[in-house]
Image 1: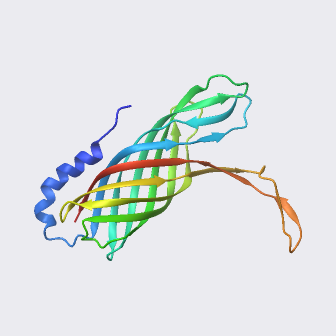
Image 2: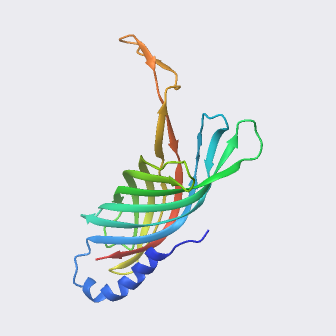
Amino acid sequence: MKIKTIPILLLAVGGFFLTPVLSLAQHNFEIGGYIGGQINGGVDLSTTLFHRIEVQNGANYGITAGYLLGELGEAEFQWNHNNAGTTAQPIGGGTSVTVFNLTQNQYMGNFLFHAKDRESKVRPFLLIGLGANSLSADRSGVQGSTRFTFAIGAGAKYNMGNHFGLRGQFRYAPTYLTTTSNGGYWCDPFWGGCWVTGNSHYLNGFDITGGVTLRF
């Protein structure tokens, strides 16, 4: 799979031309580009042909744009892209078959809490995020959709100077797909009454990435 490096190249070129301006700024904004690997999960199906699909692992890349809140906080926007093959497991058994390539574009609003102040050389952080995942398949008859997703993660930043740095992180970001009514029954022991509970289905995703940051 060919890996695109446009976000990182743009940061490098932009940083060269913006360096004189950055020396006068307040260092409240951070933008970054990253690349890494994403581990995807699978989803059970209820069809006449297949009983489960599995999204294969693949490369992911994206950009971040954040605003520093005081010494420890940061609010940021993140776009994450992943494209991977998807295989289906036949009901009667046998070898799984490739059915389509699935493209995921996540648009996240994240909050980062840093363990050290903004001028520290190494800044470990925790991340939580909410957003949407746009899913599309390169197969006729398979419609795309946009679903809710959330993320938790952790990582560290390494400040190489006042404006440039490195960032590495790992992140778990499951995407909600649907809820079925086969989750069983729940009965209230105090007020009485029972009802059917839903079974929520998620497409799990876990990624490890590294990249560069530019502060201005």
